[in-house]
Length: 516
Ligand code: AMP
Image (tube, rainbow, N blue to C red; front, side, top):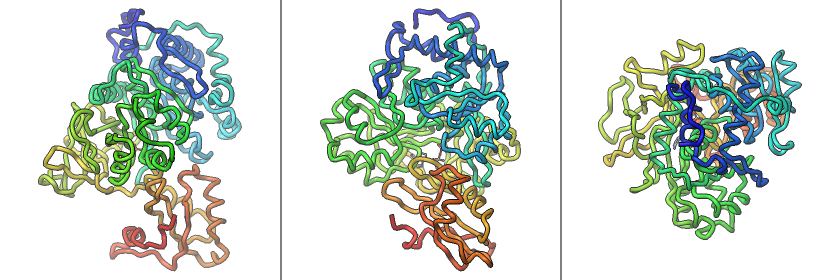
């Protein structure tokens, strides 16, 4: 326990921050986070900074249950801001800084945040979008996380009473696009995050001696919650880099005990000539998720480093569901067993559990699963079964050893470099363009990104002048870069089945679309 005793409110509260706070190291001068530039922040800094930030948010007139939309570059201050929101009972709503104006506009109108905190470069856009209460927070590279928000926090007092919360109160909303193309806000509660964080911390045997090399983005569950919360719950340390860069990772791995990444990171590490056993001698766990890890990457990595990458499976709506073990065999192509407290079943189209070894939809239930989507009762009802299981839209099977494998997707989704792209959203953006009659977006194998987004377009009458470059330039205006197709191909018509549905499996099977 830490040397500040918890207040009466904190003891009885299910506020996630109170849970973290109760598990800080007793010596608060221990380092929690060290940046790539060598700047260190202690556990005491978390306590003080989050109190100041929470006071600023309260001073802006925000009260429990209000949403705070945050679109900033990765920085320690952004982590503190998420914790400050929990502490103040506010709902943290991070957005990828790459999102374009129209993507942000949709979230603004759906979530109705009471305040927006954005990078200084996005201030003009937020003003154009009519946001009234907006403060800035700069990334570390722009000068130590400055901006109007941090400036105000420097003038506020470091004392703030953590707001009592119930487990079901919302801590965060993370938007995930859907098969309908309309992004949905997954409502993540304090209980969801506490349950998943504690289960992972135990499953992966975190200790205060662990040092996580953190290179993931923090607008996504993986980097924001899975990575940071395991460290916080353990009183451990993070080396916190603004982004993944294979060479930098190779130069710093000797100082870390845990590394987390998406499969693309592991493929890139294997491309580094200096990467091998020596570099990894201090590491006890390499963890992979957010997209399928190819068996050949698993084997090549094991051969080169002696480490079996630990693969796990999760999603925005659930955090992590299943994981390969720390002790015991890690099996390539599987995501291991359900975490304690997580129920997983594989069902057929009729919702019946399939026999062992057969493929069906993965459904999950537990304290880690969100209650639903923000202000979308019909999408929420559709996403859950009558007995409360979340339909993940992922296909999978259970092996005789109790290990699950994720094998394909029932939902139309492309995962590129660990980021999800829902084809429907891209198709809708393309169909807005002049000269396009119809379009289809598919994922094709890509050596670096796992999958690449590829668009197939049918020209409309008068669409003769349409070019690949022209379409891509237009899409870049309205879509974050990672969603923009890598290639556009023109067809006379899209293959359709008797029901008129585009047969994407036929498109995906065309080898000419997959040259990267
Ligand atoms: P997200 O909501 O962005 O975290 O994406 C969740 C989706 O990523 C899941 O529904 C799966 O389709 C996919 N995913 C996550 N982890 C894995 C994994 N280990 N293997 C295969 N697919 C995965």
